[in-house]
Length: 438
Image 1 (tube, helix red, strand yellow):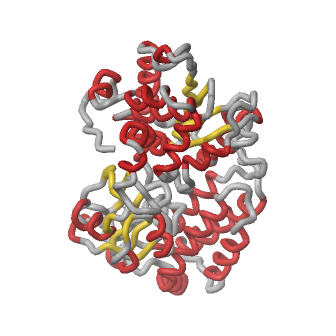
Image 2 (image 1 turned 120 degrees about the vertical axis):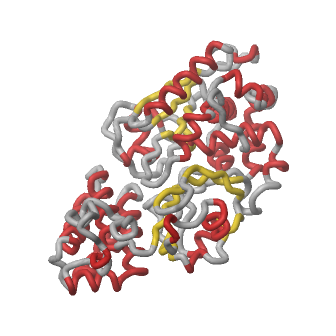
């Protein structure tokens, strides 16, 4: 997207200087069907984690059926390690808003929604300001730019539920119901918000739409790979020397990104492993990313996913048992409780891991964790149960010896490196990254 960030880049005035809303003007001169075809031809993939083609999702909605159609921007960025959507909304909110307007036009929508994470204060204020600016400039409301198309946008603030980042749970929350995922079919593009055809797209996905409409699908495909066109915004954190948000072309060298662009690991430590796309994706060891490129097909072939672009770098010296306990505590806390395998399984896994960390591990605990993970695979309405199982089993697959050592000795193999001054030495639950942080 290559949008320079300044102190005023979030304003409509500056966005206009960067080709802002030119794509909307072009889209409004096209038919809704042709707009969808252009997005489909670009091969734009969803950037929320599933990587489903945006144009294909739009194309499912039947136009001219007399039904209200809705578009919802998923701004409920709750995946641990992911913060690139928040950055977009804070720095260039009009880019995503323009994409939302274009998408609504393509789907013949009269009302659109932005479901934003409740904890996002600055991002919420910036999105609210951008909507007000758009209304004042005639880019929202009645008869947009004199074309006869009208659209109203509702900015809805969530209440902090991780599960509401799942599309059907988000729509339930928008309707004022309990934010629980629902079984499908029917698909949301058939019966979504208020039981009407609805498309839910991620913030970054919609932010790419103006680029595609302005430059054309052929130009968009010149960047990235054949199967993963364009770029991916990656928010990287952990023990990396230069954490932050980076925009990377699909197909870019993973090791070059880590060691050159991000400066390698802090304090000269060696890289132990990477969680590629938020804690819901399986971690990859340092050796596993050698020769791997940052695109969906390459990541899947390596045994993981690009996911939501929330990359966490973990240094040698990190206790993976404690990391697993912290991740599982998160999943247990965020389970909505609707599905029995997840409701019971998340708590069971957390209790086992906490007992191991407390020094009371049993030899059979490792196999039990695998069994619970398998029991959650494919047996829950949403993917929270699956993801929690994948996260735990991936850590076990790569670092089983650390669990065995902890169970046998009642402590981490890294505890000998801790000092009295280390604030985490007396609280094994306080920090998953104990050892590497010292």
